[in-house]
Length: 285
Length: 245
Image (tube, rainbow over all chains, first blue to last red; front, side, top):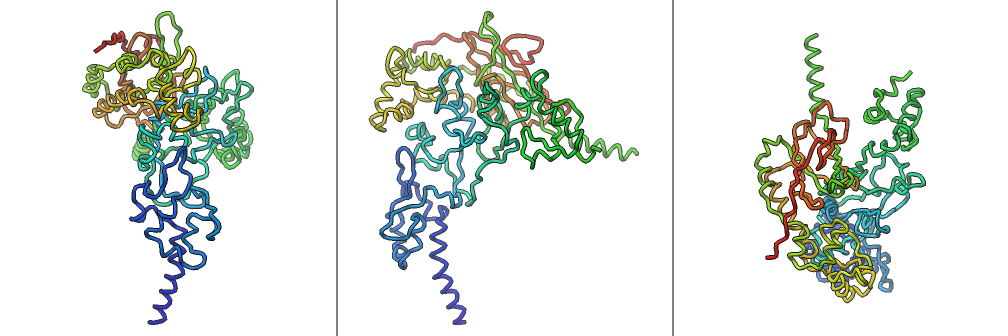
């Protein structure tokens, strides 16, 4: 019995501080206070951890636990009294504890217009949040400044009304990028005339009705592509590849797709738009 | 044999019922008889389940509402002519709709409200460029989004009578998609009259989404002018004159 007790005490000593340091949780009752109890709401972005005093009032003893107190590693990259270096805020290596509530529909109502009659705008359209990350992918906001330019004060949810946008959820790992079915598409492409540079909602057809981010999917219908890429007298990119499949069932569609998608059966809608009867690769002799 | 046929029929019906459809709107309007037909950009349309008859109460409420036009709203709150012109130039309902360029802070196109807000922002943020880009944070609430909030209040009141409504906004070409529609009857409406030149246009049309049409995405043409291709013609009324009370 004494051995078991000793074993559990040892586990508590070894594990407890390590767990508390690595897994700071906003779900803990005492960590559920108003955000500005600990975080400083700074202009133009909130980009640093709370100061020591936010933790010390409850965790004083943990600050003096051994030569390298595990609690320091919640914020600091090195556990040393002479090194103030901190981990990036927010730390991408840690799980996300909050979901963002962003109503695309409301923002579409008031901003999000890409104006062609004016010089290119760096803000007051989708590019406030979705600048180019690569030629193919747009970025998503990683900080607050793209929100604060309107929501810093007065326009709710304002900077210190964190719950207006951040909702506590089960910790999860952030997806790096949404699934792209047609990764060959280039947002700035479309030939010399850059035909792809259009208002975002021309192709992303569900954005203007999306009140939440949850369940929002890449939502570009193939009709957005075939308006140009499968038009008589213009281009026949879809038709060409469907014909190629009919001739060789192992043909991989490459114009839009990577091999993982291009080697699958084309969906019925592709055939419908090309005005062909749908076929399965396995039925092709 | 009969049993197999019945089973096949049931499966077909089940598949058809599970199929969701798409309604592809194309809104093209004429500002007046001499103007060309053009796509109507950035206007919200709603799809209400049920027929026109089933939505009679909602249609009556749309008819009864007395809304203030954009120009009248901004005149009423004492906005400068320069601000009203700036909004009109971009067909903007609020100041968030377009960038406040430098030439609206100084020179002949100066908008006095922007200059005041810019100076307050510069004091707060220190940097002229940030002050310009964050200018709306220093504007008075009514000027900033009062008109939008008024419209939202009116919309929310109407939407109480029409649950399960989908809404989409047209793109710059006047196109928009309603997706994931179950087969049935819907009313396509803009709920709040659209300001078009000197008129207010309201669209309320019945749309059938049939299982057989579900995969087509053929454009459903909406306009303020009759034409053989136009499936939904709006009702136009002259814009009311602004009162100064």
